[in-house]
Length: 121
Image (tube, rainbow, N blue to C red; front, side, top):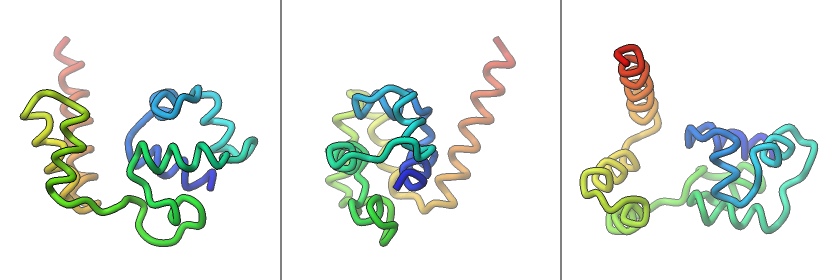
């Protein structure tokens, strides 16, 4: 499970600190779990699945897809909890609809854009 937790965090493009913060754990705590020094507790498994919309079966034993499927209405409701900005909510919903290859292209684009903007500062 520790490797799947790391794969999830990387899929979400979150640092150990940011990932842990959403679960009420320090970045160092996430590091210890990912490296196998500590095991995932039952509470951490349930919190991870709830917070990140992860299939419990995938986290526990690697079967099935990483994420639960959402309807578009559920996407919209979930996005509304993340932002009050209609553009941001729309962006989140459309991102969730992308296949994995398209998501990776989008992430690469955003990282490149961010790097270019830092160069202008």
